[in-house]
Length: 463
Image (tube, rainbow, N blue to C red):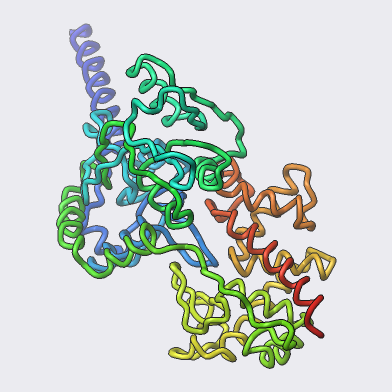
């Protein structure tokens, strides 16, 4: 009898252990119960994504990115507010989803057997592949077949692009000259820029990243695919079938919407370059039709009016009607939210005086936020960088400079180096960075262009 009781107790303990482990696994992995009805009750859709130029980033204080905009449109269709949680990497993103830290992965996640058994893929199924990035401007015709890569040097960083080139080289019987750059300070987008400038012959990128970079460098050719197609889409937990169905139906209906087309155009079609025509004749002692306004408002911040004019030229080419790819408007190219905050009345974004007055207010606030830079002339470079990138990215670059032994209050050859490095994963995921990915090359050039043009104005135009 005693032995039977002991056996029964052991069996009970074993059953508790087995079912307990299963329940724990379900709670931690895929059985977190929070489907569409619970999400609607909460009033908030929490999406998980990664920082990147095609996914999510902060520009001039505003959340942007193609996947971010689609998520925002989807949340709006459900009558929900959107909250973004940025993960460290794909594995972290999936872990957060299973743990209930987010409702939906808004990222082109590869549809693989490994993840298909534990995730519910949904939304638009996107077919991606890797492409050869080359320049149309180089001598000779662009390569149109992978066999033409034999004898050619292709530069990549470690990871999937290098792995694919090695496999392709084996498939072709050898001959591709694969140059591996293992520097932590070089990103794929850096290599693409070098190809555009003629410093490198070829590199490799995912087709969506390549398409986006063509809007910055129109001389690029990205037509040659070098890999098999890979299906990818959004994903939710297995326990969220209602949300998965809603996302898929919404994507099917949304593909022809004006909002979706506008987002596609903004990131993958519209040129990111501001065309600049020659400035007015400096022999007449004029820089622009707005010199009187620059002189009037530059006094409020203690700036030389010619510096304010140089900023305006870089931003808008003195065109009060221009609208940038990101939605910045008017002479001083203020983002809509910034214009409102600085007091520009709705409908008056194209009024030159309103734009200049608001820009000066923003500069004054940036100046106050950057008082840790003691030298006033040096601080101007930081203010210009903040005007272009947003204060958060400049503070991140300053924190990185300090961490890596550079001078955080000196821009040239110090902080400017780290604004460039904010497009590299190792740096934008550093704990000292609070604002994530940023394409710093534009800010780097922005500060240099304005300060150099200002020197020209000072030499030729009286103050």
